[in-house]
Structures are given as structure tokens and as C-alpha cells.
Image (cartoon, rainbow, N blue to C red):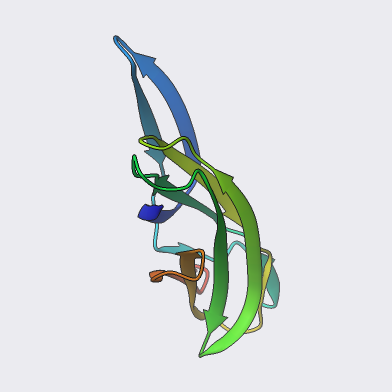
Length: 128
């Protein structure tokens, strides 16, 4: 299996189109957000990880997402994946992260200890 994309977003919707096809609509894709209140706060952005399983690959694997801030692990999520060979699937990952200062976290996503896909997310100061 391999990660096709990993993005922070507001919403995900699946819709059928004519034929044996499905569309994935992602709304509010983002790499940063303005904090809704002054710090400290707990922030939990939604990450979607889209995965492809090749025709000759096993249908079962593990998705691991580790969140880092300044090189230090602040959250971790591991989920089982079961995707039919030759198909695509997705998983939603949500981690509650404490912020005592504004800055960037990185979500390191990988399948079965394979290569990492790294997605940054920055929490910004509120707009005055």
C-alpha cells in the first residue's frame, strides 16, 4: 500500500458518479489556521490520508501518524487499514494537541514502517 495524499481539511464527502466510479470531495484544505482564542488551547485539526492498494499487495496494513513539534513527538495515532487490492481508501486522523505557543506541527504519515509523507500545519495568532 502507499499514501497517495495526506491533507488537513474541514470536510470530506464521497459521491457516486455514473459508472463504477466514486468522487472524493475535500472542502477547506488547509496548512494553517488562526487560533480561535488566545493561548494556551487544545487544537484538533482533521487529517485525511488517502491510500492506494496495488493489485498484487496485501489488503491489510497499519497506518501510523506521528505529530512532531520542534522535533518532539506530541501525539500519535495508529489505525488498521483494510483495502481491497486495486482499490483506494481513506482514513481520518484527529489528534488533540496542546499549544502553549503559536507555531508549526508536522504530521509524519506512513504505512507499515514505510516511507513517510510529512504534512505541516501552523497555528497562527488570532487576528485583532
